[in-house]
Image (cartoon, rainbow, N blue to C red; front, side, top):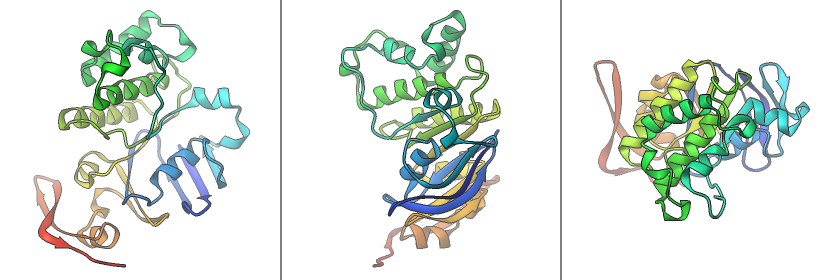
Length: 256
């Protein structure tokens, strides 16, 4: 469980308070510049912030960096890839303890099945597309907190993990995140597609101008909220328990 108490980053986000539950996938939505990245970085202990962040009752700023890295993993939005590595070498960097054991190979195989990584392992990172690199980075991050390899892992944070991915791999990634939440982790990710958020998120946090505009289940994504936060008019369609927010053709709110 991740608890934020008046968390704020100067001129970027906050104060934001709330609890993100273990065993649930929380998806952050909001326009560009709404504070999603800053919130995630501060929650990971990677950005100086006001307020407090607690992970299962322990204050993050009381933990050593090595201990923190053992408890949580974060995929940042813009990763710098090590030069000269091949796909499998990048993935191996995410294995807890650094030893590629039989158990680690089994977890790599599971991730490879979801993200179609087999053809990427032997290729240099420089020869891969942005989406292919992103899939490897997602897998590397997930390995770090895989309960089968790291039973102490508690938290998984991802900043725009779907960026650069085609539709097939976006869906595969979201299914993986739900799987990891089902293993007992607190999983939080920012995404831009509000319909995917409504379909896959257990909980939705919507940020607007650095503040928490709404939170709750997928039902908080209403046409009124979308018009206010995203400045887009949408129509809500519901069928078989699913919600779809369809943009009105040519209709965009013009607000200052």
